[in-house]
Image 1 (cartoon, rainbow, N blue to C red):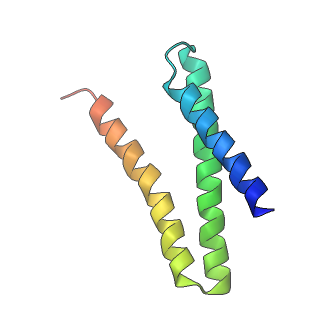
Image 2 (cartoon, rainbow, N blue to C red):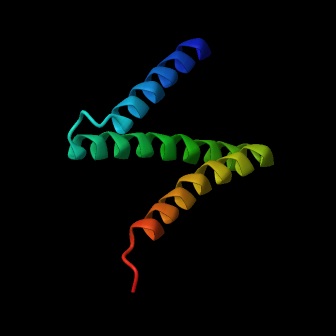
Length: 86
């Protein structure tokens, strides 16, 4: 069962990264796929955090917090780069 989940997540990861980075797709499609990818990633990270809190496993809690912090820091960096100077 875990092999199947690993295979499906690997296929999703590879496909989403190919679509997001592909310049041959229109920008709205790339944004939509990137948003879907972000939602799945944040959902899995939140699930890790929730399971860690529920089972009092602090390793899972820290892993979930780290997985939630990385996209937040990345989005902040992109926002700062695209913001026009004053």
